[in-house]
Amino acid sequence: MAHIITWQTQPERCSRSWVATIRSARRAITDIQEEIPSLNRAVIEDACSRYVEAAKDEAEAEMGRPPAISSLSWHDVFEHDDELDS
Image (cartoon, rainbow, N blue to C red; front, side):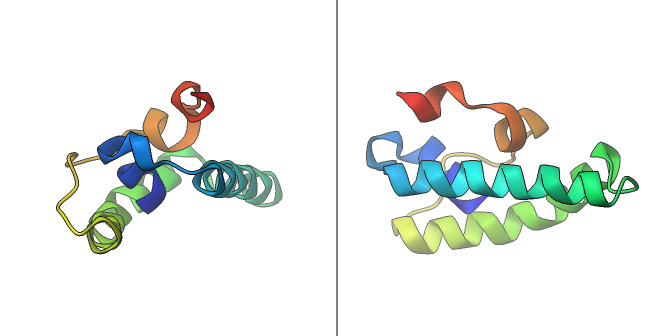
């Protein structure tokens, strides 16, 4: 989440390693969901809402300024891949 926040705030600084980290985390979550079917979208969305603040703090520390976003959607975290390719 912190990499996504940083990428959305400072897209010009998005490195290939951030892209790899974001994609790897998405794959890991998908793998875990397959192993634990009760870990469905509703459960993950609930957990994500609790972790956004921590991710924003991490991104702010990395960037040296407050993030330009206040929240992340499911789409931002798990599906939004088109800008990663630019």
